[in-house]
Image (cartoon, rainbow, N blue to C red; front, side):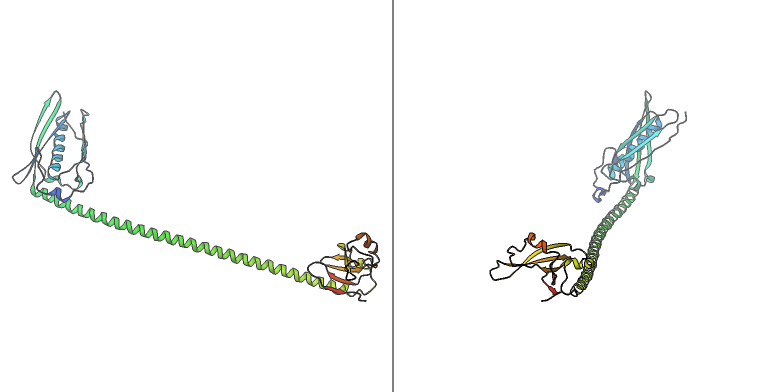
Length: 315
């Protein structure tokens, strides 16, 4: 019956071996001893076939060699199958040495034995590994360890430099955001100032325009001359916005007043004194209203925002 080995693999965890683990003082296990110019290592395996048992013995011997010579724990997984029996074998354990850094070419088979009991096979195998090959592996592992430490230190330095660069970049971004915010505030303030200036200029222009029109109005009404009543000027000025009654004290007792009719146009008024000296309550509209059409306008007065006056008919 032909037997074919489909797949065998060893995967070792990447853990660094300290220098002290390489010393010659490592205590040897019962399945590993020094003899002659190297180490003699034995291993055993079991399986549903001779091939599987032999493969297990090889794996066990290599594991024992690593534990004996390098110390620590080894992690490996192995699988092997046979086409006719579909038998399988697998195993797992740990070691501090990375298997990728081990050169097994000097790990030589010396002798072995196979025994079958009720279809179950047991194998035992003996291997030798010269001091020279072991030292070469140790030198290689030391070099790899130093390189890993160097790479780790370099990686830490790069990470620290990267972190500093990121912090600087973050600071620059915060400063840029603050500058942009200040610029936006400056632009907003400038815009507000510009808008305020525009509004003030517009109001000032309107005020000047209004004042100009009002002065033209004053110039016009002061040319009316004497003898005109409100009815005489309505065709030119239009009806007044409202009519107010005020009183002018006629003596020091303030008991008698000269009634004054204010024909109001915006902020200004045409003023017509009402005849009669019995006006003791200057806002007595019932008394004054019968003189609206007959009282003659004598001057123009500022009704809102001041007390300026301009004579139309000065007696």
